[in-house]
Amino acid sequence: MRIDYDYLCRITANLSGIPVRVYKGEDLLSFHSPVTLNRDPMLLCREQLWQISDHVGYFLTEHFYYYGVLSSGEIRFIVGPTRQLPASDQELREFAFRMGLNKEDAEEFGRSIKAIVNMPVESLLLMLCSINYMVNGEKLELRDLTITTDEQDMLRTIRASQVIQKGGEMLPPIPPHNSYSQEQAILRIVRKGDSAALHTWMERAPAVRGGILALEHLRQMKNIFIVTATLCSRAAIRGGLDVDDAFSLSDFYIQSCERLDTPEKITNLQYHMVLEFTERVERLHLGEHPGKLAAAVANYVQHHLSEPISTEMLAQSLYMGRSYLSARFHSETGVKLNDFILQQKTEEAKRLLRYTDRSAAAIGDYLAFSSPAHFSRVFKKYVGLTPSEYRARAAR
Image (cartoon, rainbow, N blue to C red):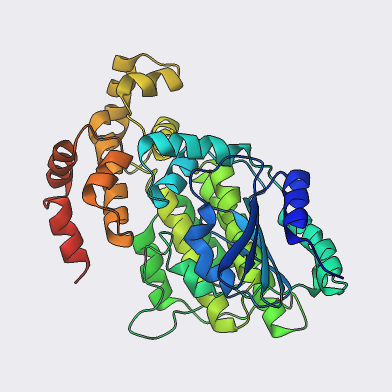
């Protein structure tokens, strides 16, 4: 039976509310989308999608979006992006920045992505299973699906802001759930946002023996990973991290873990997860005893890094007077509010300079500085180097 892939592509896109493409080898045969996209976001992860060789699989991006992939000979059927929960405005702006879009195009791109239907990954895969039956004559269930993307690609994204290995040797594993004293030590570090203490603890971490959570060793490690992710997300929330951010991060790492096939990869990812939770909380903490106000300000800034942020805007969002907010924040943290805002933008600029190839001018524009000169001036004030000097030094 000859299959009309263009028809199948169009019907699937209209039914799901998600963009769909059909490729034959490297050539695009058909593309249908319920929204107008000024640039196809699939281009960011095309290489990883082409590495999926099973009939049905998916790839999870660092922005918590996923793409479903169906293969049949030379034909590749790609559905996405979609995600389970709606993206925040800040996430959409970062997504557009990674796409290399200017501000005007980024706003249009964000509106289009927001209009795509959110779908759980299980529903996406079941939809592909039904198409797979039509195309390949193969009956698959969710339990049959294997995710085949390399987790090291995920670790090399912006999220991979720290080195996983030290001196070429594998770092010690995170202690399992039932090792109570070790578990509490880790959770205290996450809650306090003390990444330096985490590095020190890992160098001296004692050997621990966990209880049996599964009869098969790899499943046992994955189950421990899931428990650790759950506990870390709760500890991070207690440390001030936004609830939605914590749960999204936990879901991302759990889904990434399920794709792994060796104990070494799980160990690396687990350490990376705990470190990211710790660093997320660390970015919220100011002073030795940060209060709720400091956490609320820090969360607001983290969610609006790519927008102009004024003390007036912050005060309105927290239902406070501008002068009162500035005075109370300074009293509680010892840092002037405007300095804190610019320091957070500078930290984000450092990360983007180090882990992306976007120009300093593009990064300054993305972070809502008024001009490249303004960005360079602020960056040098807080870092002691110009953006280009910092990038050159970081590349050594």
